[in-house]
Length: 531
Image (cartoon, rainbow, N blue to C red; front, side, top):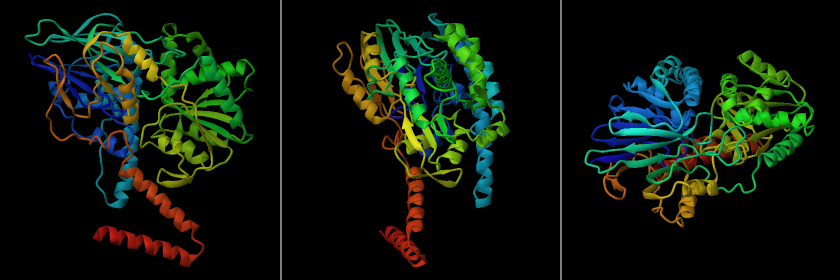
């Protein structure tokens, strides 16, 4: 028999989820996500797929987040014409998130091409357009939780609620290669939700498996003692500390679910008198559309009625147009702005950061994971200056992190989730994490009985699963070296160097001192070139 598993994304990095199961009869993708993080990783989105799109039999999506679904329109544009299986919640969210992704790419590429034209550089084209994204939606097929679905010859899948996001799923897959005595059972975890989610149930899944592909985003984190009540108390304290008469609290947040959870907690704190009445601006057209979908699915959600009430509060204002977004800058009393993107890589949050980072009366509160190389991570790591839209911005705002809104299980929760899946006979692959999280979880899982030693694959790795254990197959040079995956890249180092050079020149006492600094930099460059 022939059975192989390819790791085309989310291997030693958090984003770009994409796995291919291949037999002689069919080839099935699980997820087709966009790479985020450093520029070197994001450049993979523009490259050709490392497989033939037209040769894919079917695509199974775990959920609608862009790092799991964001390259679906590119896949369709490249020739994939098969079915895309997803839950109804995922299908509904993808119907707004994918076109939004296409629109953002068009806008950003137009801006980049204007800069490239001025610099005499070649123009580029978007990965896909809003129109491409809308066209790809025709291939979606909704599936119910808990029901087997034949997805390709020799493949059937069953979706389990992963507790991460509206519609999120762990995907159980039974594969029957030619010559196999019985099906080989897989479970792709997708993103596993934590124990204390406001809107989602605890994650569920089957047991008695051959292979598990397990996410590891927070594999090195233990949020012991986390409850919704404790989270609200900590949010209350952060808001109180941020309250300055002419200040603002900026919360970079994913538009889907994270924003809705924050909104419920803020409104509950106001109603309980724990916080005063504060205007809250949801500055994200995508968040507005997502909130409408959450309203439609309110009966499927925990605390769905609380969410509907929060969305309709008189203190909450959704901004749609650019003019409405800019008008927020004219407010001179304390207010809260929740805007995408969650890692500060695109969208309206970058405009608000540019307007507020240099001001002492501002606070930026991070409430989710910040991947290496993103503006959010650079700020979180303590940068004193950053570049936004080509301009230097001093960082004087208070920077805070409240990592209790994550949609991901922590290390102990992931371990408990895996224990509930036992026995796992042939192998566990750890994906969707940076090196510290992957290695910490690998060590933690080593003492579980009936679980083989977990494997940490690298991007573009291929494993032959036709025997009793997984065997890595020799392969071509990976698109992204392991040393680059999940790390800062030279683009980050270059941006930091330019900021340091400008800072050194600004700090020089007079024209003569500035000239000395510049001369030394030139000498260092010459020495480096000759070395």
